[in-house]
Length: 114
Length: 191
Image 1 (cartoon, chains in turn green, blue):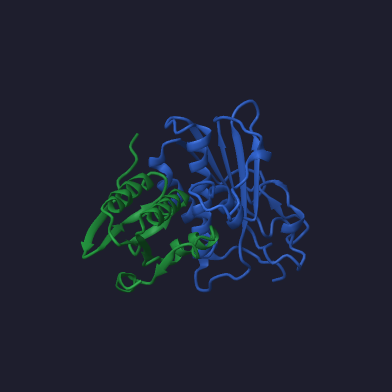
Image 2: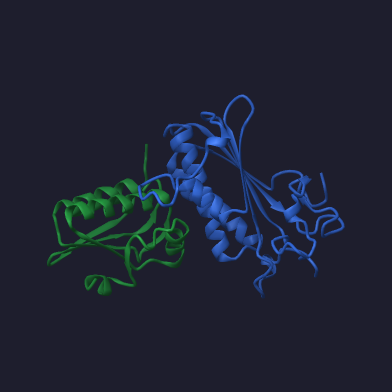
């Protein structure tokens, strides 16, 4: 099955890993995001930032990947920070009432300080 | 057929249960919703509900099998069908639910959209289709909750001998964006 491509950038700044997905994070794309997040967490960085500023659509499989990453980050004592949520992505977090579960910052710069 | 054509779907899409086509179906219905006069936020919500519903059919109904048929129908909800508010309004050729009637006390009764999704997938008891409790922090189980949250009416039912049917209705906000003739929903209640 063709699950569709999703572009995800990965960067390390000191003890922080930054994962930046692009486009849509729905059912076809969520497995790729999950794989990237797991790979980033395996490096045991102190902080993991997921920069969502380039994501214009997210559905529950994407949310599920982030919830899994959050649970994993707690086990590994990594600080998971989301940033750059576009309005419609933020709305999905609010509908699912997940916005209070995550540390959410406006942009990558403020996420680096969270 | 009525003069408004609301006794049959205005749009009918047949697709396979392949996630590859989720994006296209979502964009198509979102685009139609916009042309029917929904605001951007509502279009996003409709697209999200459609995506979640199709995703559930693919994952749970067809068990991720990519070649099952799925049919999506779009029915505009008529705000001023026939003689107008409350007297002849219809939801796709069927009696308008009481809450949708234009009686001055139902601000949502300015028309809307009805989306019907049918499949030939595994049948389940509609009463068992429930979203998980939001207090349970775990991945998954949010799709049904989101659909119920963003749509005004959500009905799951068995479809004859095989498959399921999901009917989702969303009413338009009574506030209509100015300056876009294509976005005018027709006559609003009380106007």
